[in-house]
Image (cartoon, rainbow, N blue to C red):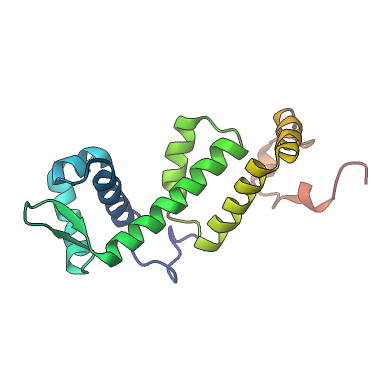
Length: 173
């Protein structure tokens, strides 16, 4: 089932998760978060952000301080930190393990952060950390993966093959 989120774990839309993460990141970076700053961070118009924040305010995740800056409630901040963590893990995995260019990893991690479970993010983080801690393994994997090309080549059949090439085991076995 592709739902765009893990409904049992999170019940916020991807946009709402983005809003919370952006507020948290802007506040972390500059000590306060004006609506205009967060809108710029997200690449949306301030009125769009204002409308999008209403459900988060109604749920008690976002509020305003005495200066009308955006603030996260403790629950809102917890969610924002979780989303940021999943984003950071996915970006590191794409960039550091798979060798995806940073600009592409940034965009794709932003998409993936909403769909990956906390458990999967933690296992990916374990893999990333293991590769960072074990230089011999990291060097071996980078060397082998850099030039690796699977034996089967993409074709129209691949769209429906259900990874049949994975079921046959290693070549020569």
